[in-house]
Image (cartoon, rainbow, N blue to C red; front, top):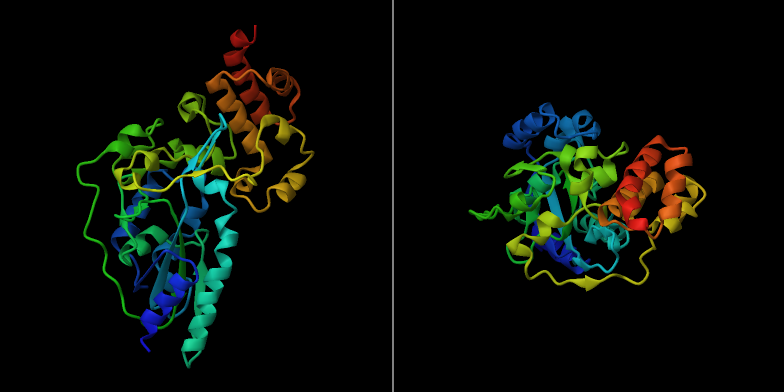
Length: 337
Protein backbone atom coordinates (compact mmCIF):
# COMPACT_ATOMS: atom_id res chain seq x y z
CA UNK A 1 0.00 0.00 0.00
CA UNK A 2 1.27 3.46 -0.92
CA UNK A 3 1.51 5.34 2.37
CA UNK A 4 1.05 8.80 0.87
CA UNK A 5 -2.05 7.84 -1.10
CA UNK A 6 -3.50 5.96 1.86
CA UNK A 7 -3.19 9.08 4.03
CA UNK A 8 -4.84 11.19 1.32
CA UNK A 9 -7.70 8.74 0.95
CA UNK A 10 -8.23 8.73 4.70
CA UNK A 11 -8.28 12.54 4.81
CA UNK A 12 -11.02 12.71 2.19
CA UNK A 13 -12.92 9.88 3.87
CA UNK A 14 -12.72 11.80 7.16
CA UNK A 15 -14.51 14.79 5.68
CA UNK A 16 -11.80 17.09 4.38
CA UNK A 17 -12.30 18.46 0.87
CA UNK A 18 -8.65 18.99 -0.02
CA UNK A 19 -5.40 17.30 0.92
CA UNK A 20 -1.87 17.92 -0.29
CA UNK A 21 1.57 17.15 1.06
CA UNK A 22 4.76 19.19 0.97
CA UNK A 23 8.23 19.18 2.44
CA UNK A 24 8.68 20.62 5.92
CA UNK A 25 11.79 22.46 4.78
CA UNK A 26 12.08 26.05 6.08
CA UNK A 27 10.49 28.80 4.01
CA UNK A 28 13.03 31.24 2.60
CA UNK A 29 11.11 33.80 0.52
CA UNK A 30 8.25 33.85 3.02
CA UNK A 31 10.74 34.35 5.87
CA UNK A 32 11.90 37.58 4.27
CA UNK A 33 8.35 38.76 3.48
CA UNK A 34 7.13 38.02 7.00
CA UNK A 35 10.08 39.88 8.46
CA UNK A 36 9.33 42.92 6.28
CA UNK A 37 5.64 42.74 7.19
CA UNK A 38 6.50 42.75 10.89
CA UNK A 39 9.07 45.55 10.57
CA UNK A 40 6.46 47.74 8.86
CA UNK A 41 4.08 47.19 11.78
CA UNK A 42 1.42 45.42 9.72
CA UNK A 43 0.73 42.87 12.47
CA UNK A 44 -0.95 45.67 14.50
CA UNK A 45 -1.58 44.39 18.04
CA UNK A 46 -0.86 40.75 17.19
CA UNK A 47 2.48 40.71 19.01
CA UNK A 48 2.51 36.91 19.07
CA UNK A 49 3.35 37.00 15.35
CA UNK A 50 6.78 38.39 16.14
CA UNK A 51 7.28 36.21 19.22
CA UNK A 52 6.65 33.05 17.18
CA UNK A 53 8.52 34.17 14.06
CA UNK A 54 10.91 31.22 13.80
CA UNK A 55 8.16 28.66 14.38
CA UNK A 56 6.14 30.10 11.51
CA UNK A 57 8.81 29.57 8.88
CA UNK A 58 10.64 26.53 10.25
CA UNK A 59 8.50 23.47 11.15
CA UNK A 60 11.55 21.76 12.69
CA UNK A 61 11.29 24.26 15.54
CA UNK A 62 7.81 22.85 16.24
CA UNK A 63 8.64 19.17 15.74
CA UNK A 64 12.15 17.78 15.91
CA UNK A 65 13.01 15.92 12.73
CA UNK A 66 10.03 17.32 10.80
CA UNK A 67 10.09 16.13 7.21
CA UNK A 68 6.60 16.42 5.73
CA UNK A 69 3.45 18.49 6.20
CA UNK A 70 0.03 17.08 5.41
CA UNK A 71 -2.08 20.11 4.47
CA UNK A 72 -5.86 19.84 4.68
CA UNK A 73 -8.79 22.00 3.59
CA UNK A 74 -12.46 21.98 4.58
CA UNK A 75 -14.98 24.17 2.74
CA UNK A 76 -17.76 26.26 4.27
CA UNK A 77 -20.43 28.26 2.47
CA UNK A 78 -20.95 32.02 2.28
CA UNK A 79 -24.10 33.00 4.17
CA UNK A 80 -27.04 35.08 3.00
CA UNK A 81 -27.59 37.37 5.96
CA UNK A 82 -30.88 38.93 6.98
CA UNK A 83 -29.64 40.76 10.08
CA UNK A 84 -28.55 44.38 9.63
CA UNK A 85 -25.32 43.50 11.41
CA UNK A 86 -22.92 41.43 9.32
CA UNK A 87 -20.83 38.54 10.62
CA UNK A 88 -18.20 36.72 8.53
CA UNK A 89 -19.70 33.58 7.01
CA UNK A 90 -17.39 31.17 8.81
CA UNK A 91 -18.70 32.41 12.16
CA UNK A 92 -22.23 31.25 11.33
CA UNK A 93 -21.08 27.68 11.89
CA UNK A 94 -19.74 26.21 15.10
CA UNK A 95 -16.08 26.95 15.83
CA UNK A 96 -14.00 25.07 13.29
CA UNK A 97 -11.16 24.76 15.80
CA UNK A 98 -13.46 22.34 17.61
CA UNK A 99 -15.32 20.67 14.74
CA UNK A 100 -12.16 19.78 12.79
CA UNK A 101 -10.43 18.14 15.76
CA UNK A 102 -12.17 14.73 15.49
CA UNK A 103 -11.47 14.17 11.74
CA UNK A 104 -7.89 15.38 12.23
CA UNK A 105 -7.45 12.90 15.08
CA UNK A 106 -8.79 10.08 12.90
CA UNK A 107 -6.08 10.78 10.33
CA UNK A 108 -3.39 10.84 13.00
CA UNK A 109 -4.60 7.52 14.42
CA UNK A 110 -4.65 6.04 10.93
CA UNK A 111 -1.03 7.06 10.34
CA UNK A 112 -0.08 5.17 13.50
CA UNK A 113 -1.93 2.11 12.23
CA UNK A 114 -0.25 2.20 8.82
CA UNK A 115 3.35 2.67 9.94
CA UNK A 116 5.41 0.12 11.74
CA UNK A 117 7.55 2.67 13.52
CA UNK A 118 6.45 5.37 15.93
CA UNK A 119 5.68 8.50 13.91
CA UNK A 120 6.22 11.75 15.75
CA UNK A 121 3.67 14.35 14.71
CA UNK A 122 1.98 17.57 15.70
CA UNK A 123 -1.21 19.05 14.26
CA UNK A 124 -2.73 22.51 14.00
CA UNK A 125 -6.10 23.97 13.07
CA UNK A 126 -5.37 27.58 12.13
CA UNK A 127 -4.26 28.57 15.64
CA UNK A 128 -0.77 27.07 15.44
CA UNK A 129 2.37 29.17 14.89
CA UNK A 130 2.85 28.11 11.27
CA UNK A 131 2.54 29.98 7.97
CA UNK A 132 -0.24 27.61 6.98
CA UNK A 133 -1.26 29.38 3.77
CA UNK A 134 2.30 29.31 2.50
CA UNK A 135 2.66 25.59 3.15
CA UNK A 136 -0.83 24.84 1.79
CA UNK A 137 0.16 26.70 -1.36
CA UNK A 138 3.34 24.66 -1.52
CA UNK A 139 1.22 21.49 -1.18
CA UNK A 140 -1.00 22.48 -4.10
CA UNK A 141 -4.22 23.23 -2.18
CA UNK A 142 -4.55 26.55 -3.95
CA UNK A 143 -2.74 29.74 -4.90
CA UNK A 144 -2.41 32.87 -2.79
CA UNK A 145 -4.58 35.68 -4.11
CA UNK A 146 -4.00 39.40 -4.03
CA UNK A 147 -6.27 39.51 -0.96
CA UNK A 148 -3.72 37.16 0.71
CA UNK A 149 -6.32 34.36 0.96
CA UNK A 150 -5.64 30.89 -0.36
CA UNK A 151 -7.82 30.28 -3.42
CA UNK A 152 -8.73 26.99 -5.02
CA UNK A 153 -9.22 27.67 -8.76
CA UNK A 154 -12.42 25.56 -8.97
CA UNK A 155 -13.93 26.02 -5.50
CA UNK A 156 -12.85 29.46 -4.32
CA UNK A 157 -11.47 30.60 -0.97
CA UNK A 158 -14.16 29.73 1.54
CA UNK A 159 -12.31 26.94 3.33
CA UNK A 160 -10.54 26.24 6.61
CA UNK A 161 -6.99 24.92 6.86
CA UNK A 162 -5.39 22.31 9.09
CA UNK A 163 -1.96 20.66 9.09
CA UNK A 164 -0.20 17.59 10.41
CA UNK A 165 3.59 17.82 10.62
CA UNK A 166 5.28 14.38 10.65
CA UNK A 167 8.85 13.16 10.93
CA UNK A 168 8.58 10.78 7.96
CA UNK A 169 9.17 11.49 4.30
CA UNK A 170 6.14 11.28 2.03
CA UNK A 171 5.51 11.98 -1.65
CA UNK A 172 5.11 15.71 -2.29
CA UNK A 173 2.62 17.59 -4.43
CA UNK A 174 3.43 20.52 -6.69
CA UNK A 175 2.22 24.11 -6.31
CA UNK A 176 -0.46 25.27 -8.75
CA UNK A 177 0.70 27.38 -11.67
CA UNK A 178 -2.08 29.97 -11.53
CA UNK A 179 -2.60 33.51 -10.26
CA UNK A 180 -5.12 36.38 -10.06
CA UNK A 181 -3.81 37.77 -13.32
CA UNK A 182 -4.83 41.39 -13.87
CA UNK A 183 -7.84 41.25 -11.52
CA UNK A 184 -7.66 43.80 -8.67
CA UNK A 185 -11.25 43.63 -7.42
CA UNK A 186 -10.30 42.76 -3.85
CA UNK A 187 -7.76 45.58 -3.61
CA UNK A 188 -10.23 48.09 -5.05
CA UNK A 189 -13.15 46.90 -2.91
CA UNK A 190 -11.54 46.95 0.55
CA UNK A 191 -13.30 49.92 2.21
CA UNK A 192 -10.50 50.64 4.69
CA UNK A 193 -7.62 50.28 2.23
CA UNK A 194 -6.15 47.39 4.23
CA UNK A 195 -4.82 45.91 1.01
CA UNK A 196 -2.19 48.60 0.52
CA UNK A 197 -1.00 46.71 -2.52
CA UNK A 198 -1.63 43.27 -4.01
CA UNK A 199 -0.61 40.39 -1.73
CA UNK A 200 -0.01 42.76 1.21
CA UNK A 201 -2.47 43.16 4.08
CA UNK A 202 -2.10 45.86 6.72
CA UNK A 203 -3.87 44.44 9.78
CA UNK A 204 -4.13 47.93 11.32
CA UNK A 205 -6.82 48.69 8.73
CA UNK A 206 -8.36 45.24 8.27
CA UNK A 207 -12.01 45.00 9.35
CA UNK A 208 -11.48 41.42 10.54
CA UNK A 209 -8.66 42.54 12.81
CA UNK A 210 -10.49 45.66 14.00
CA UNK A 211 -13.60 43.69 15.02
CA UNK A 212 -11.96 40.54 16.42
CA UNK A 213 -8.33 40.66 17.49
CA UNK A 214 -8.35 44.38 18.31
CA UNK A 215 -9.12 44.91 22.00
CA UNK A 216 -8.83 48.70 21.85
CA UNK A 217 -11.15 51.30 20.37
CA UNK A 218 -11.80 51.24 16.65
CA UNK A 219 -9.81 54.21 15.28
CA UNK A 220 -12.25 57.10 14.64
CA UNK A 221 -10.97 57.58 11.09
CA UNK A 222 -11.90 53.99 10.23
CA UNK A 223 -15.26 53.66 11.96
CA UNK A 224 -17.41 54.66 9.01
CA UNK A 225 -15.37 52.39 6.73
CA UNK A 226 -16.00 49.38 8.95
CA UNK A 227 -19.62 49.81 7.87
CA UNK A 228 -22.06 47.19 9.22
CA UNK A 229 -19.55 44.45 10.10
CA UNK A 230 -19.54 43.35 13.74
CA UNK A 231 -17.37 40.23 13.49
CA UNK A 232 -14.90 39.70 10.69
CA UNK A 233 -15.40 40.63 7.05
CA UNK A 234 -15.97 38.81 3.75
CA UNK A 235 -15.73 41.69 1.27
CA UNK A 236 -12.45 40.62 -0.37
CA UNK A 237 -13.91 37.13 -0.81
CA UNK A 238 -17.33 38.26 -1.98
CA UNK A 239 -15.88 40.21 -4.91
CA UNK A 240 -13.42 37.49 -5.96
CA UNK A 241 -14.36 35.92 -9.32
CA UNK A 242 -13.16 32.53 -8.09
CA UNK A 243 -15.98 32.55 -5.53
CA UNK A 244 -18.80 33.09 -8.03
CA UNK A 245 -19.73 29.41 -7.90
CA UNK A 246 -19.45 29.08 -4.13
CA UNK A 247 -22.82 27.73 -2.89
CA UNK A 248 -24.48 30.04 -0.37
CA UNK A 249 -26.63 29.02 2.57
CA UNK A 250 -29.23 30.68 4.75
CA UNK A 251 -28.36 31.67 8.29
CA UNK A 252 -28.40 28.54 10.47
CA UNK A 253 -31.40 28.56 12.79
CA UNK A 254 -29.32 27.49 15.76
CA UNK A 255 -26.74 30.27 15.49
CA UNK A 256 -26.83 32.36 18.70
CA UNK A 257 -28.60 35.70 18.66
CA UNK A 258 -26.27 38.67 18.75
CA UNK A 259 -27.94 42.00 19.42
CA UNK A 260 -27.09 44.88 21.70
CA UNK A 261 -29.97 43.92 23.98
CA UNK A 262 -28.98 40.23 24.17
CA UNK A 263 -25.38 41.14 25.01
CA UNK A 264 -26.35 43.69 27.66
CA UNK A 265 -28.45 41.03 29.37
CA UNK A 266 -25.37 38.84 29.85
CA UNK A 267 -24.03 39.68 33.33
CA UNK A 268 -20.33 38.91 32.81
CA UNK A 269 -17.58 37.84 30.43
CA UNK A 270 -17.62 34.45 32.16
CA UNK A 271 -21.30 33.96 31.34
CA UNK A 272 -20.64 35.21 27.79
CA UNK A 273 -18.03 32.47 27.35
CA UNK A 274 -20.48 29.86 28.58
CA UNK A 275 -23.17 30.96 26.12
CA UNK A 276 -20.95 31.33 23.07
CA UNK A 277 -18.40 28.64 23.89
CA UNK A 278 -18.97 26.70 20.66
CA UNK A 279 -19.05 29.71 18.36
CA UNK A 280 -16.24 31.77 16.78
CA UNK A 281 -17.68 35.09 18.05
CA UNK A 282 -16.27 34.23 21.48
CA UNK A 283 -12.94 35.56 20.22
CA UNK A 284 -14.19 39.16 20.21
CA UNK A 285 -15.42 38.88 23.81
CA UNK A 286 -18.55 40.56 25.08
CA UNK A 287 -16.95 44.00 25.26
CA UNK A 288 -15.68 43.76 21.69
CA UNK A 289 -19.04 42.74 20.27
CA UNK A 290 -20.84 45.56 22.09
CA UNK A 291 -18.26 48.02 20.73
CA UNK A 292 -18.76 46.63 17.22
CA UNK A 293 -22.57 46.73 17.36
CA UNK A 294 -22.43 50.33 18.59
CA UNK A 295 -20.18 51.23 15.67
CA UNK A 296 -22.43 49.50 13.15
CA UNK A 297 -25.52 51.09 14.69
CA UNK A 298 -23.97 54.51 14.15
CA UNK A 299 -23.15 53.72 10.53
CA UNK A 300 -26.59 52.28 9.83
CA UNK A 301 -28.38 55.01 11.82
CA UNK A 302 -30.21 52.34 13.83
CA UNK A 303 -32.18 53.99 16.61
CA UNK A 304 -34.04 50.99 18.07
CA UNK A 305 -31.66 50.84 21.02
CA UNK A 306 -31.37 54.58 21.54
CA UNK A 307 -32.06 54.42 25.30
CA UNK A 308 -29.47 51.67 25.88
CA UNK A 309 -26.87 53.49 23.78
CA UNK A 310 -27.46 56.72 25.70
CA UNK A 311 -27.11 54.83 28.97
CA UNK A 312 -23.82 53.26 27.83
CA UNK A 313 -22.55 56.67 26.74
CA UNK A 314 -23.16 58.02 30.24
CA UNK A 315 -22.53 55.14 32.64
CA UNK A 316 -20.52 52.30 31.06
CA UNK A 317 -17.62 51.03 33.17
CA UNK A 318 -15.64 50.46 29.98
CA UNK A 319 -14.03 53.60 28.58
CA UNK A 320 -13.91 51.96 25.15
CA UNK A 321 -17.66 51.27 25.15
CA UNK A 322 -18.51 54.65 26.68
CA UNK A 323 -16.55 56.59 24.05
CA UNK A 324 -17.88 54.43 21.20
CA UNK A 325 -21.46 54.91 22.47
CA UNK A 326 -20.94 58.67 22.57
CA UNK A 327 -19.75 58.58 18.95
CA UNK A 328 -22.74 56.48 17.94
CA UNK A 329 -25.16 58.71 19.85
CA UNK A 330 -24.04 61.78 17.90
CA UNK A 331 -24.71 59.95 14.63
CA UNK A 332 -28.17 58.62 15.47
CA UNK A 333 -29.54 61.45 17.61
CA UNK A 334 -30.89 63.49 14.67
CA UNK A 335 -32.73 60.37 13.46
CA UNK A 336 -34.40 59.71 16.83
CA UNK A 337 -36.61 62.79 16.79
